[in-house]
Amino acid sequence: MFPQPWLPTKYFPHPFANMRFTDVPQAKYYQSYDWVDNVMWRGSAPIQNAFRRRYLGLPTIHLGEGGHTYLTRGIPFAFMWSPALVPKPPDWPEEADVVGNLILPGSGMSDYKAPQDLLDFLDAAKAATGGLGAVFVGFGSCVLPDPEGFTNMLVEAVKLTKEHIVLQSSWSKLEVTDPAIRDRVFMLGPCPHDWLFEHV
Image (cartoon, rainbow, N blue to C red; front, side, top):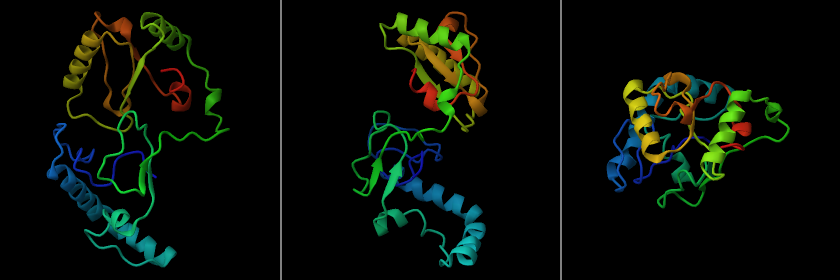
């Protein structure tokens, strides 16, 4: 299981490849998974292979062998995001599937007490959108290379769509200060997603 695309596909590039995306399937998108896998493997191979040999009794994985293991061996693999957000690419094997978000029952996260200003914003968003509510925009541990440029693009998107957004910038430290849309953007700090996704 993994929360990001990691199997090669010609329909979109690897999320770490920093490539421009178009809706046209391309061979270079497929190749981007090998590029990223090989770069990451060079840094982690010594540690992972030592662990495999010492504790698991497994053979060494050599450069270039790791990324396609799931494809060549028919290993089932679940990707944890909503298929409504990014559907399973047509060129992924039957063993790979997009299964949605996973939330453990009884994890205790749903005991979260939201701040009143967040609750007020979510209520106002529902009232303004005929019950549809706010859209969540989050980046987790992604660090955007141009936070100011991205913020400007986000501001323009909110102006054009007239959506209400809950923005959780995390590591990228985005801040929306444009007074024209400030009432349609809620800057969110730490918040359990199992609670949040029930409200956006």
